[in-house]
Length: 217
Image 1: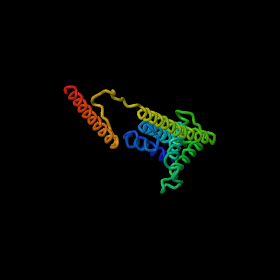
Image 2: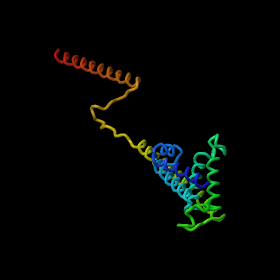
Image 3: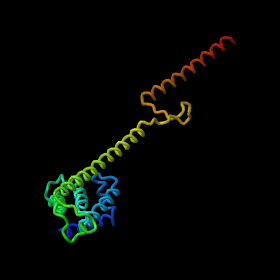
Image 4: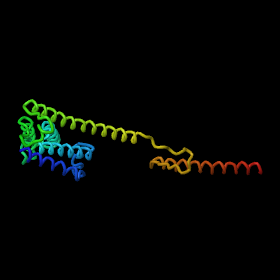
């Protein structure tokens, strides 16, 4: 069991590390930003968990790593879809978490490196401990990503508000290039005032001419 699940988990992680960009885009989309950072972290964790399980080395730690990655997957992707995998649910994730729990409780078996180059740690206590550590670590990753996203959104909103509130520099009042936008009624009044001024000028000139003519006579 540990060879099969460990080998598949390791291959899954290596696949992420070989080409992280598609995974990074998916992580960005679901809110795990920066996506590339989370893609590489997930690839490393899954590879380490798979290799540890495959070799039967540091089994509780390998189980906790697998539990953590599955917790993130359930929290961000599969949990909202219900349990069944046919509807995108968490059935597969829960199965892997159950396998990790069983390996930590029962141990990796005789054909393992635990007990040879590392101390063998097995039992129900270790199984519960790895479940708690893995679940809390996964939820911590999700919460940290949520807070980071909120900070980025707040900073972007503040930048947009600052740009909107910045006043536009006005040109000097006496600038010859200053554009004047008159309403139609204002334009008519301006024309009328100009005509009246010209009429007054003509009348004044005529009156002046009459006065000059009277003096000469």
